[in-house]
Length: 165
Length: 351
Ligand SMILES: [Zn+2]
Image (cartoon, rainbow over all chains, first blue to last red; front, side, top):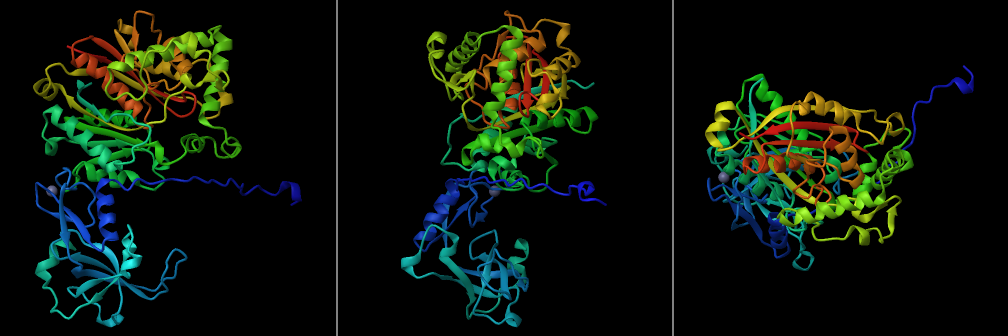
């Protein structure tokens, strides 16, 4: 096949767009709490569920969650996995442990790293606590919490978190 | 065909930049208001359909997180169109026609302020021959405006008159963003933005959200004193390539209007989704609307143009006039794509 008959298999059309996100009222309150070393959630006025981080609404009742609730950094691992796949977008080298953590008093588990714990000791029901960055490094970001680590407490019973898996 | 009516409508105030609320927080009060106004308990609404665009949000599947605003758990029957909410309304209307549901919630949201809207709109163009050249939305509208003025002998003064009337009418619309009394002659003294268009010929960039509840026959009569019945609805699409169609005319609007049954009687008002002044004139021509028809009493998109919302809002504004008893027959129109590429027309009637 001559050069001129080779198929055109691709064109280059670079696209570049920039966006400035709006955190929103609920996330703004949560992120300001992070800057003070506090974990702020919101309670649904109808069903009473506490959302941490808050999304500003109850996904079940579709009403604004305007009651602010502070919870501590203590919680329970509801499920976990050990990541062994490297990725350019990760700030941490594999392997590492990711977990869903249900903070005491909250009704929505969230995704976080577990450290200071051997992989074969991570388990569902394990009690953990937040490890914060040093006070002078606190900021309006989820990264104010570096990771969670195990604490010396008996495991939570499966019954206590089975609704939140 | 089943009788289907708009029984409620709510919309957020159109603003240039909503810095406080995110999309969920923008949508939630509007959805709550429309549902409450409809008188149909939220759990009894048979179907939910939304219109929005990931390119505006800058994130994939952004409509999924917006579901936080509607109470989607336990799971609801739900769908989404990556188009103006008017097309979500169309999907809901079809679903009600099929007969397994009697009501639907439709909502739309758009927060153009998070990105650069003209650049975002460029990405809806043909990705091989047009988008890489980077034409922006205002320049494309200007190509169309020039073609229209040359083809019809209309003047830039006619365009300024559309802008002045829209902004004046918008003074009574609490959701409008650009309102006030403007002298068309003075508007013509302003510099061109992209000739032949001046700033007043273009819509504002808006953040906004809107919601509508549809109900069929007996349910609509039960919950609403004066439902706005959708007597006919149709949408048509024209070629993607701007060079493949006559920009001075809107054949798809004319055809959609004909199939929606527009020709069977006089109309009192029309809410036209014409973001640019010349597009209102093109649409009037296509739908055969005479001077006796009041166009965009809400102020229309020239007074507030949230992307993905403004078309659905035309349906809501037209329905509101009928529900209030101020008119008995109305046209609602929505558009999508560059230079009126796709057009939806509905004929609405009060009782
Ligand atoms: Zn709730």
